[in-house]
Image 1 (cartoon, rainbow, N blue to C red):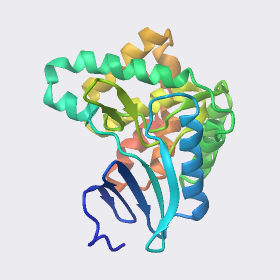
Image 2 (image 1 turned 60 degrees about the vertical axis):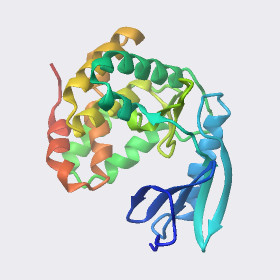
Image 3 (image 1 turned 90 degrees about the vertical axis):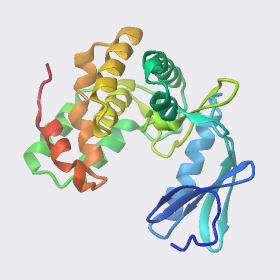
Image 4 (image 1 turned 135 degrees about the horizontal axis):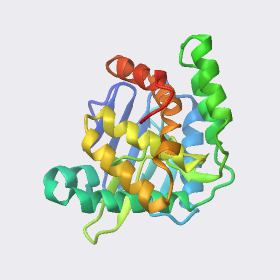
Length: 252
């Protein structure tokens, strides 16, 4: 994917680049992304926008130099991850803000979003794990209550932008579904561990449990399922760690 002429690049991956043009953010996709995936991502963002959450406004879906692009509002500010790194003494304050924001997301409803249970079942089938493990994961998934809460699917501090006036905006809704909030929490907990921030992960899980009155053990029942869904991404450096989490039946 030739990006030589693109300025103000924010994120660059093998087949996707995100860059800024004035007050717009452009997400430019390469050929590995299907038209339906890109249109579905834009549609999901529009559906979340209608819930009233503070997110970047979707402006346009178009083609740039023959490649599909999603254009949205650019939000000026610092990510919560940047703020945590710059102010380690304020980590408790930031994690509380983070938990409150995720709980706010879970109060929203968007009935036309894809269902989390369906997505997880599909991911389990794509893991390449043996039939016995897949059966155990599917049995666990089938036993989990089905809810209809908006679940971000990649809720981590790098996806929260705090503007100069203190308003938190939530970005990157490409993995959003409707379903059980505890699955969303288990995934966030997993992401902290994958980034080597077990300390913040434990702090986050304890605080979410207390604020939402949700048993930690209940959230942890989702961990093997979300670890399996992460395994599908095919990141070799994560594989051994994720397999350990998938293999654990019960957590202390």
